[in-house]
Image 1 (cartoon, rainbow, N blue to C red):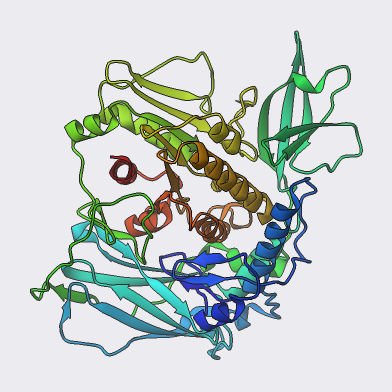
Image 2 (image 1 turned 180 degrees about the vertical axis):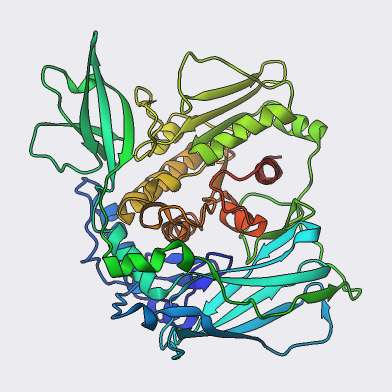
Length: 534
């Protein structure tokens, strides 16, 4: 399992390996500065039986084949043969007495197992971060895997002061392999319950992303690619009577007892650099390179930014800090559509606290996942948040009368130079086989391409997933699954003229470990968005 780890939770990929694979097929998965592909098919990963165009189905299969090669089976006879943070060794390469802002500091990691033996293969899931708590400063590091048990961990020294280095072993490669197999083994880790209403009668039946029942089913198809959702048809009620859906976890696991032992709280996120001393960084009178204004279409480097005194500073463009007046001016006349999950809903809660003239308009809907609408009629500002469509995992009942299937929502917009769309999805896809996520990402891309045909001036911004709590239920919701999606999403959208808010990199730099980060992170995400559209 090779990764390129360019922030705290990033997979590490052997560059030569990917260069050999590059010519195999024309379905790359871009890992920032590397591209990968393979023409092997995905025989191990089951795919949901949804009728999609052959071209889409072939691409999904090829991406799955690539990911299966990324994460080969790593069976182990005993936990002692897996990677040990305690026994692994780290050393600074070419140490210096003085480090200057802008220098690169490299650390060599030699992975060893619990018996002290050198690991002969790579693939450990690592998180590299540098920080200065007193300065409220942080940034991700980049990890390169040589696929033989050694790793190069690189940090760009982005600010002056005393810097501490961190490298966490999130999961050993044996755990990564187990999680990948378990994820793609079944669609039944989450139970969907559909509420059907006919007059005064209400009935709940089980629903799913695949037709896995022998009883009569209601099939709901969405978008041009006909993505499907299924519910058992209640007796004496039409399929059109479905009004709400809720979910809960199913008591099921595809991990063995031995594999589960790798994900005990005490074995996740273990520090590997505890013996390294802090680094003092000086200014050294180095000239800073000037950068052009942040704009849509720019490629994000590694890392894409850092936090200093709580403020996010990009490394690849000149980002303007917008005060209240500039924010008001930027938003004037704009139609903004926020399509995604509750991490994007945080934006629509935050904005009225900054722009006091924005007021919520009551759409007579209920529940936390209702559509939210902000208006400023005088300034002609409209901002709307709408949850994305299935899968959406919550124990709250949510309405499906106006289901927010992102490709359909994009197709409904005419678009113009004053229209902006922000898209995020991923957290709710983590408990399901990866083909569900890949299919949705391809569908969203196609909808954006159609939008650009009729309105190339419309601004589209992709917000990647946040990292989340370290010790949440790993098999269903852990960041390993989010990172695979992060890689896939970055690749599928890499050659589109869209802006990217790399929330993965940003939340790692802030060290939030919370799916809903605090307001200072949300404010900086929104500031990046405003830099793209104004």
